[in-house]
Image (cartoon, rainbow, N blue to C red; front, side):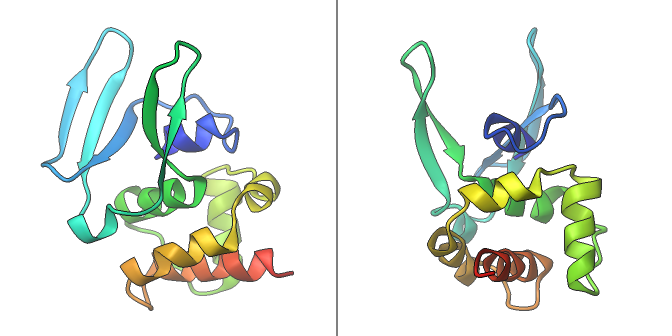
Length: 139
């Protein structure tokens, strides 16, 4: 989640622990390099929003697209987030998450955001953020 956002250059903070999503149960590991955290995600939210990348060594890895990483973060770590207005969304993204919103809006694609919408309830904070992002892309 946060590591993916850092990978894309959207947050500058050093991210630890690295959190991945899994269909299995949540679990935490301590490694010599960094703590690792696996968080359970429901099966119906897992099938979309990921791409394969290749690192400098030629090894491939699966990573969430930026909009999926953001929504997974909101779903799992921003439990107390209350959205009353569109300003609350921007405040959360820029001030709480410290996301480079202008860069984020440059790299996301409305069709990829729309692909995620059916997996979230229409009144959920995740859905409201996705719709807000779409509206910002259309400006």
